[in-house]
Amino acid sequence: MRRLFLSVIAIAFGFSMFSMSGSAQAQDAATEQAIKYRKSVMTAVRGNFGAMVGIMKGAGNKADLTTHADALVDLSKIASTVFPEGSDFGETTALPVIWEKPEEFAKSMKAFQDAAANLATVAQGGDMAAFGKAFGATGATCKGCHEDFREKKEKRGKK
Amino acid sequence: MTSISKYSTARTMIMALAVLFFLGPLPFNSANAAPPDELKRGRYIFNLAGCAGCHTIKKSSNGFLAGGRKFETEFGTFFSPNITSHTNAGIGRWTFDDFTRAMRDGISPDGKNYYPSFPYTSYNKMSDDDLSALWAYIKTIPANDRANTPHDLESPFSWRFLISIWKIPNFDQKSLMPVEGKSEAWMRGRYIAEALSHCRECHTPRNIMGGLALAMDYGGTNSNPEGIVVPNITSDRETGIGKWSVGDLDMLLKMGMLPDADFVGGVMAESVTHSTSKMTDGDRAAVIEYLGSLKPVDNYIKRKNKGNSDESWQ
Image (cartoon, rainbow over all chains, first blue to last red; front, side):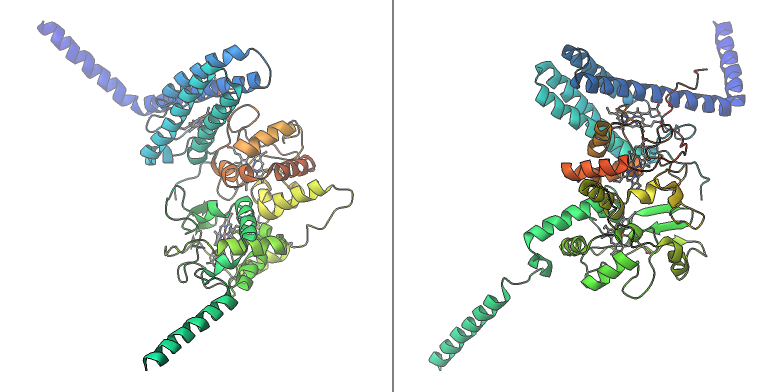
């Protein structure tokens, strides 16, 4: 028992030494992965959103609108987990204001989640006019968030 | 005594009524004197010109046109002024002539030059009718007493008199003459793009003087004065938007959606919100026709979303 305890301590100690020496790099790597994950999630959002545009324009099967809308609902929930604090540098178009005004960002995210949920419900009904309207409303939440929180800017040193 | 006073009260009332009759309804807010049609038109011009975005702090619920929005540029930090009807804090004392001089010549009522961060270099092409309708509308904006924030500029940019020198090569008021062989829609589209919605102020790169590099008109830039990446929107098929369909452009201007179902962000999303989404269908179609005619400029701009396609997960 005592030996086990000691070895746990030793491992923990060793681990903390390791993580101390590599902490800066480890953090950079973690940020990089977080940003890549975020972009992949957003690309999946776009994929499903774009697929619905395609179906509305006559491609594929109308019945699959529900699949894409449901996927958007799931992705909209994941989207709220892809903006960890500190992931505002590197290859990203996410603006620092996301972390400076977290309540406003959360509001924008919530609007997206609500619009997606409504879109999925309307998709079940099969009324295309209603679907088009709900689709436009969802798009407005994408634009709304990108307007306030996303921009491609050249990185400049802080003044 | 009583009869006299009764008589004089009646007389006063009659006189008051007569005065009212001649003056029309009391000018509680003198701006209300403008006919409703003109106000509606003024509001439309105001929307297309995107005045609200720059003169309002984002998301502030009670600061409509009260200024204070910050623009961090390589010349220093600008703050938009209060343009509500407040007599001290805003432009409530201005006459139509003052307004015209600001919009046409970029000169303030006390004779100072405005910085071109106020895009009068585009607005100077506005028609007389549109300018007066716009003024009628601006005067109806409720007063707000927010005091102006001074710009924080580094010399020599802080020397306003230098702007007069800047204006010589960079100030062209006569460029919207009719062009032979072009349709009405094309001319309308050009007017909206260049005089009202000032697309060129962002989409045309700038020369060292900060003026528009017209040889590269609408060719985009990898870093505007605020450090923003602005795409090439000429008809160049490789580096511009020459492959876009009319429907693609319509979706973008109406709701901000790009052909790949991504959405524009930042200042372009603002332009969509304030300006292009509020255009009539006819005006939007006119802008699209004009855009399609832009001379191709070969200028590669960094893509905004690279996804992960050209990077690998390590």
